[in-house]
Length: 252
Image (cartoon, rainbow, N blue to C red; front, top):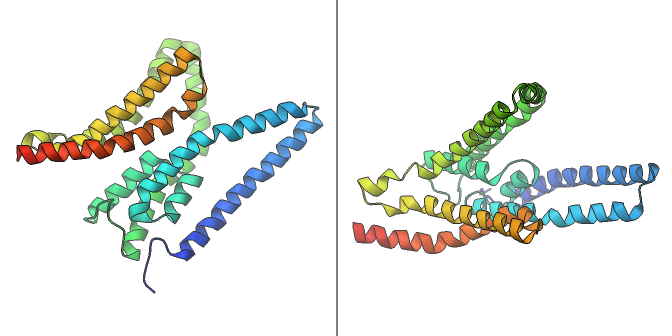
């Protein structure tokens, strides 16, 4: 049987897992509604809460859809659908998949043709994301207790510590964006600036959403800032790629 990243069997396996997750969601929703009735919560409040939660899940759902489209070229639809619907994030999944593909002399624009390479990519993505599942139950309580105690002793130092951890996480992704910039100066390859330019466009869109949310007092813009910046960055990548290709040809 010839291997295919979009084989029907993969969709069946993924659908089973996602159905189980959806079943859990429905189970806890029903339990929550029953509990609300037991404590005498007003029905209108319950309906409003459920409706608001359902509406605001559209924002992350758009981000998930973008992620599935980005990864579907090389990994098919089924696996990105599973990874971004159950556990995972676009930033991690794409970097893990692309790094593995590069080690196998492939690019993300190519469709994986062999089962062994497909399994290799999945193993790298899975083992990496599993670290969080293991460490969270073991270390979260201790870390949280330490942060709370630090905040009690010195609130300013606690803020510095939290910001430092956040910047450390961001720096890991920034390194991936800027790693090839030296090619602009060594071999006049302006294509190395594409990730930087796309990131700047996405950051600008994120800042605009934040400013408009504050100025217009529209909280929903904050919830939709991520998908807006993602989609905007992807759209901007098309003309940016053309411009950088043109600059590279002129320089070389």
